Amino acid sequence: MSGNLEPKPRILEIEPYVGGLSDIKGHENVLKLSSNEAAIGPSPKALDAYKLYAGNLSRYPEGSARELRSTIGKVNNINIENIVCGAGSDELLQLICRAFSGPGDEVLFTEHSFLVYRIAALASGASPIAIPETNLCADVDKIINSISKSTRIIFLANPNNPTGSFLTRSELLRLWENIPKNVLLVVDTAYAEFVTHKDYDPAFKLVEKAENVVVTRTFSKAYALASLRVGWCYGSSQVIDVINRIRGPFNVSGAGMKASIAALLDSNHLSAAIELNSKWLEQFPREISGTGISCMPSVGNFILLKFPDDIEKNSKAAEKFLYSRGIILRNVESYGLSDCLRLTLGLDHEMETVALSLKEFMRS
Ligand SMILES: Cc1ncc(COP(=O)(O)O)c(C=O)c1O
Image 1 (cartoon, rainbow, N blue to C red):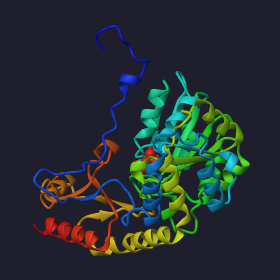
Image 2: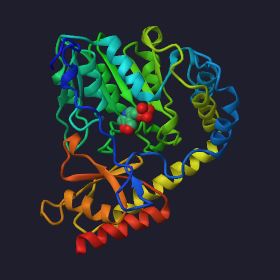
Image 3: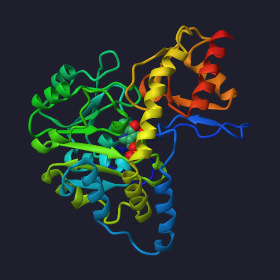
Image 4: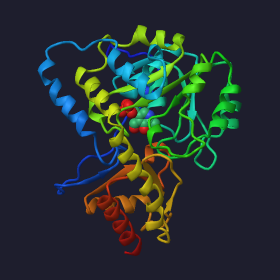
């Protein structure tokens, strides 16, 4: 870097996060299935609460998110004193890194996991360590074997984005049992609401017995309030106290809190989102079976599609073909998955359009 201003060491190693595309030149109505927001959109009650809040915009919001934490506590049957809310779970992941790691420390995560873990580690001056997966799934033994004296944080996305895989309750417990007590295990459960598998554990009980476990959640995905930027985390009193010391005093907007509360209380809307998602998790792989595209098994609201190597049928060619139809899936090259695209599960007609287009692409 030229000039006199030098950022902290490691900051310039960060590749800025590039989100999925939102528009395609020449297409007025794009079909955007690339950012994992629930297909049915937010609860109408959340939208009403958001609009109703308009009269209060001149005032600072309540700084401890008490009402929102209280609702999260009631709905999930967890203690509100052990919850902190944030401007999306992104903010909380960054704060956790900043508070618990620094130069000389190692921050672990798995090979194809959420890009923010690496960014957060470097921003705090720590070394990011990507651990190989097995069959696109976190491998508990490989994580345990990668722990060193310098390890401070392990990020585990459960389920993982973009692979859609997850660790079962017993594997998660085995991971925790084998990490030193001075290492913080961050279980990022951004997609927890969608998971219907009986062996999945949202990890609240683990938080309640372990000082060194923190769970993060978001209103961006199943509640489809991504633009409002609201997330939360649940952790031991020690972890929560630390995050509260460094977070911004008004880090969650008033409108975001009110809409999130209304969304949480509309359990019928959430059930409808989950039901539609479960239907397409099952149906979509059948729709495109035999085409040569493989669907990675997923428990989230997205599916990783693996394309053949053939230059005419690979993920690049598929992406281009889909763009020509006004369809955007997530390019996951930056996740080290250049042979794949990630499809966010959409509404019935959207899923039918994508399935038809992919079949046509593979036949063309
Ligand atoms: C695994 C995972 N964690 C966290 C997030 C961040 O979500 P938000 O900051 O909107 O809460 C995402 C978003 O894509 C994600 O996929």
